[in-house]
Image (cartoon, helix red, strand yellow):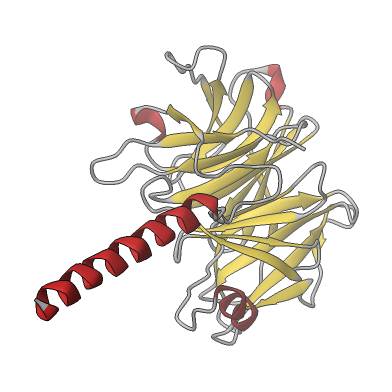
Length: 288
């Protein structure tokens, strides 16, 4: 009789604990790490089709138009976003095949980044037809790899972020500045990002960070950096001081290699196609 009462008491206690945990869970707000103004768990997803399977950079033009370049092809694609079910992308050629990794639009001029650190200038693209691109800058040194280039209007410069550079220490990612006024690279690094700071914020000593795309938020004036390796979105000030580090889902971000912002703050991130997936453009609506 005593053993039976003990069993009943144990079951009752277990049931009470389960009920308390359920009540606690219902009243506990789940923390979702996401940039201010966005919900990165719920993007609007646009499939880009076969012509942009290896999309490696995007640049905002207006609410209906975006520019993109496809890795290895000397072409710029104009993505017509009016009809998301029937993406149209006329293209124009600007040069030879190469390992193009990013694209920046400033007024009527396009700048493209080659993975070795060369910058190609393509003026007057809006006139239509094929145009000629010219290499206007080249990073010194061998065994450098770049995938990220963005424009900083405050210093009227293109900023290149190393994915892997031969003089870097293992824990440092370096930024270099190409001054559009003098049309020269500045000899010293513009800033550096310490991987250890990123790891501390994540509480993960094995986290990886190798920039694959970057852009400045037009309203927040913050730098957003995507790292496909390690699947991270890192937010810094404009001199690379890390403010927030956000893990991103490999399911949605299979190979993120492009980022740009609309004038109203809407964020777009492009994914290269995987072995089974198609290339995608993810839109994240900005809400202040």
